[in-house]
Image (cartoon, rainbow, N blue to C red):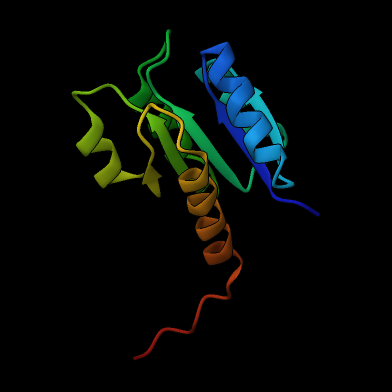
Length: 128
């Protein structure tokens, strides 16, 4: 089974470009255009990783991150775009990575692969 990627991107052309680039590598991609859609997808079909553009209309991107953080289990997050004033704050707080607004598909795919590989590894026992 291929990994499930949730993609939140409001720009139609970028959404199509991201989707095509990820599906070409075998990922199952669900796309949404707003925070409410992202939360609905997470609630019904938990993704293996989420790629989020947080410069979205409606709720503040930080509010979306807070709602995701409150869920029962984590969703690894990769930011594709953030409001300029919040970039460092968000990346330091919650993100697995940050890709600049201009699509860098090879780098995005590498980050997704790294997150998924780490998530599939068993957690070693704590050393006392």
